[in-house]
Length: 239
Image 1 (cartoon, one colour):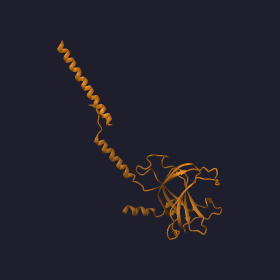
Image 2 (cartoon, helix red, strand yellow):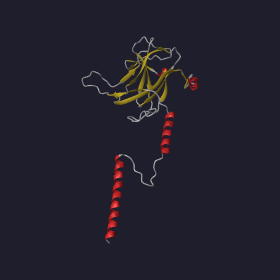
Image 3 (cartoon, helix red, strand yellow):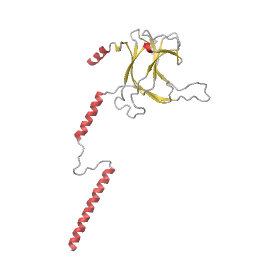
Image 4 (cartoon, helix red, strand yellow):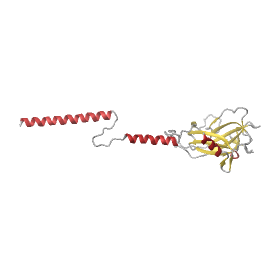
C-alpha cells in the first residue's frame, strides 16, 4: 500500500510541474505579445505573407504617388465686438509675381486645367492679369465633391486619395474687384498676360479646410476636348 501511495504522489507532482511549466510558458508568450500555437493548430504560412506583400506592391505600382502641394488651415467667421468690420473669415494664397511682366498666353490658350483633391468646400481660382485697372481680378470656381473623408488619417498612404481633373474655360471666369463682382463684366480671353495666380476660400463657413493641388496649366479646350493632349500622351509613351 505504501509503495502504491508513493507512486501516486509522484505522478501527481509530475503533472503539477507540467501544468506549471505550460502556464509559465503561456505567460511569457503573452508578455512578448505573441501567440502560442498548440499542437494541431494551423500556423501562418510564410507564402501567405509573401503573397500579401506582393499584392501591396502591385497596388502601389498601379496607383503611383502623385506629387502635390497642400494648403490647409482653419476659418473663423467671428467678427470681434469692437471691430468695424462687417464680415470676417476667409483665406487666400497666391504665387509670386511671374517674371517679365507676366506669362503671355498669346491667344494660344482658352482655359485652365486643374488637378486637385478637395475637402468639398467651394474654392476660387484667382487670375491677376495685366490691366489698366490694378484691382481687376478674374475668378473661377472649384466646386467638386470631397475626394476624402474629413479628418481622415490615411489621407496619403500611396496617392493620398483620388485626384480630380477639371477644366475651367476663361469665358466662365467673372471679373471682381476688392472681393466684389464688377457691375460691368469684361470677358476673359486668351490674349492676356497672367501676372500671378492664386486660390481663395470664402464660403462663409467655420472650420478646418484642406486643399491639395497636383497640377495647374493653361490648355486649349474645344468641344470637350483638350487639343494636343493625344500628341502629348504619345510623346510621354516614347520616353
